[in-house]
Image (cartoon, rainbow, N blue to C red; front, side):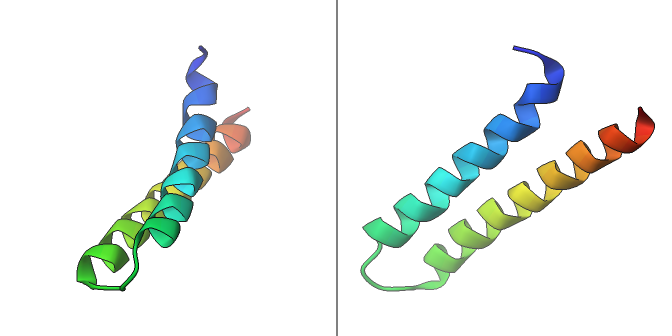
Length: 57
């Protein structure tokens, strides 16, 4: 596994976690929103890393 593949893998796993949280949760409490927002922040962070690496090339 190359170093450049790790952000893409984390983005994919975060999408899976968001979908699993939506399917699994019957009611939307603060815990639900914290899990979803943390996954979204992880996706945004990994997107910024990928974009920054492309600019450096």
